[in-house]
Image (cartoon, rainbow, N blue to C red; front, top):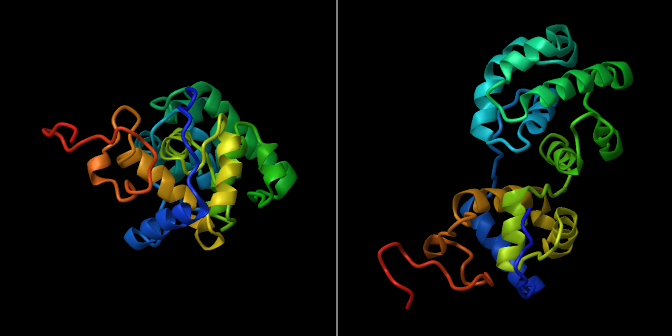
Length: 226
């Protein structure tokens, strides 16, 4: 991730106003990866590293029909898994990880996805971000998964400036009011994906522009800066 431009951190009151606004617009934000159970969610998130959710969903449609469980995934074998996900970036390594984590789930967790961070992060291909997504979406734990979108939004807006994903995550845990923690990372990821875009944020239609520290704000296309 590129080094963030330093901005002044928003106050707790400003942060609360931002999440109040997000909640008013979309009270129940959803992630965009397709899954049918805890296992397929875990696999989808592992496959989503350096790939788009749309691309992952196209590949996993057939994969999850054939292997919706660790046992079925192991039965497919690495070669078949590789064939099914070859349209996803880094597919060879990811196929090996999916096969290996499926084996571990069977051998160590009775075929179930564990609800503990330490156990999740011990699985091949699973880091802190992936564990946070699974804990949040499936187990309803108030975790924050910092991807490139959320990292950008946290720094650009002043909501949670930090030099690393972990720094942004820890800053957000202090900034986000408890009642909004469960959905916070979905609101921020979707905001970064569709409005606060990397190359040119669409400030003219941003619902939180009044609190955002980013300057100069991007004007409506066709209009110059005022």
